[in-house]
Length: 338
Ligand code: TRP
Ligand code: SF4
Image 1 (cartoon, rainbow, N blue to C red):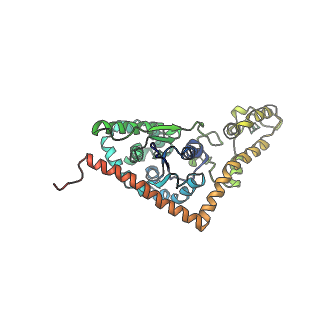
Image 2 (cartoon, rainbow, N blue to C red):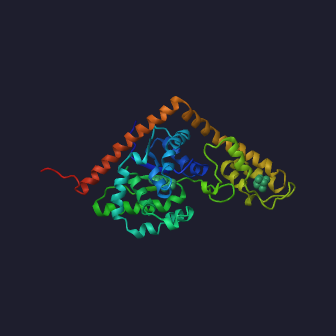
Image 3 (cartoon, rainbow, N blue to C red):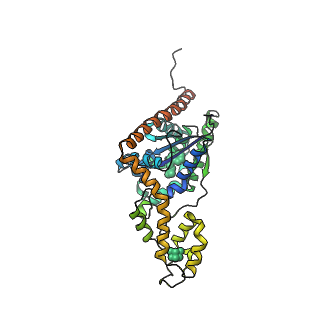
């Protein structure tokens, strides 16, 4: 294997099952990057990040580790090609987070719009912890620990990435050029809303999971809000205001013009139009679901997951402990016997 010079790092919070929005917004990008075979890839389950808003139900951050690891493998991440690991398995994340928190001015985290959004979305206004404010600082540590050059994320993560760069820049200015400044790598897909038009989110109950069953797909699509002006089957519709239509644009661009015409001329009814969308979504989701079932329901599959978690930890730890040792040198933390 030729040496891959650039490092890619990205993580996903372990707050629940993966949904289509996660996939289109970033995970699909992870798989594509891995398969380009140009970079050294580090993907991890961010269970400490899950705790920043979920600390009252600690088992949630842990109970999802196994199924999420299986999800990552089911969508095509390959432990032989990438280093796939669990954040809390590698102590360096906490250590570097602590060092970074020493040099991060409070104002930088207080003005971070994504943290503000989290505070609003999770309704934790009265309960904002030190850890939640430190969310992007921990994220900066996640990336810098592996000297990450590039970070594939969804659009909502850009303020965090900006902060990561600022922290790394500050570290470099203070202690010498040590970390690369991580660049973001966005997927070209727009943010995927739920079928009610609102942001896809578990708490809003509008989620289509990456491993949804056929019944779940059917239920989600059936309950979608279409053109409210189209009351009767014979009414012509306005596709631009319909959530199902926005899904056609994303998942079946080749059918968009046909659906637009059929809708505007009342040639197709909403239930028929939805049925077609169910088929399209099922075509994307069912291979993931089947692969995941094979992994978690067979002895061989389970063994593969456990072994991969173990190997991922070993590979990540090697890189991480190098960085931590170098940092301890900077701070003269190793007392040397002269
Ligand atoms: N904040 C990211 C998200 O919610 C998850 C994450 C944690 C992450 N650490 C990271 C992403 C480091 C990229 C790099 O999606
Ligand atoms: Fe939406 Fe399709 Fe109904 Fe038109 S026909 S309003 S695009 S569901």
